[in-house]
Picture (cartoon, rainbow, N blue to C red):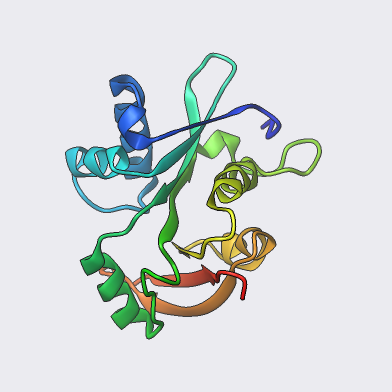
Length: 173
């Protein structure tokens, strides 16, 4: 049974030990949310502003999420596909790379999801800055991200013709 109340490690992607960097990149690749070679994903994780990691009792990485500073070309392409303006000034941060090992998915005995705990820890670090997130998972779109102040603003088709949800959390006025 998952236990979502475990301690979450937070560190810059560039500070991840090599073994953890490889484990995180492998999890993300195997999870299928991010396309590319293991080496390319590894380098992207290394550039992440902040990475949140949950470990099992035997210290195996079981869940990960990150705060990213998206490349201008990625941001522009996403804006064009979704029809929603994602200016760097309004939305400087992307919440992403959320991956939880299958056996750790679902609520724990107290009804808490490990994915929610990871995202909450990261968003505490964002503070009042704007952010955006993309996901193919409806539960994240309908429950988890709105609980963190995100609003649904559209969908687009990715390169595999899958529907992806775009959510934003604007800076308070």
